[in-house]
Length: 153
Image 1 (cartoon, rainbow, N blue to C red):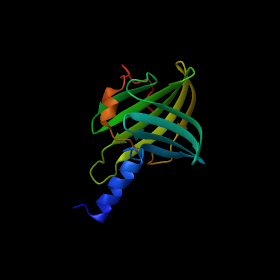
Image 2: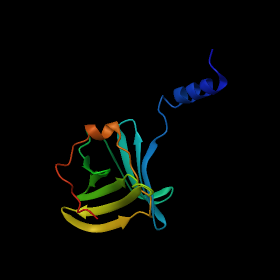
Image 3: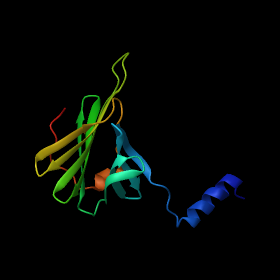
C-alpha cells in the first residue's frame, strides 16, 4: 500500500504526463539579472535576464546541434563550459571550481561570455561564490569542444 506522500507524488507525475520539474544546474546573479541553466530529461535551457522575465532563452540537447560541452581538469579542480549557439552568437556558461586547501574554502567562479564567431562581445561575471556546476551525465552525450574556447580568467 502506498503512503499518502508517495500517492501524492505518483498522482502528480501521472497528471503532468510523467514529466518532473526542470532541475537548475547552474545559477548566478549578475547585477539585477541572473543566468541559469536548467535540465529537464536531456534538454538543457540557458536563460538570462530578470528573474521570471528572461531576455534570452536557448534550449537544446545531445542531438540539437546548438549545445556543446568542454571540461578541463586541473589539480584539485575543474573548468566546465556549456556553449549555447543561436544566430551566429555563442553564449558560454563557464564554471570554475577548486577544492579547498587545508584550512581554506573551496573556490567557485561563474561567468557568462557572449561571442560572435571567435570575438568576445561581453563577459559577465557572477557574484562571488556563485556559478558552480556539477558534471551531469547528459554532458558526456553532448558534442565535445576540442579545446577550451575561453581564455582562463
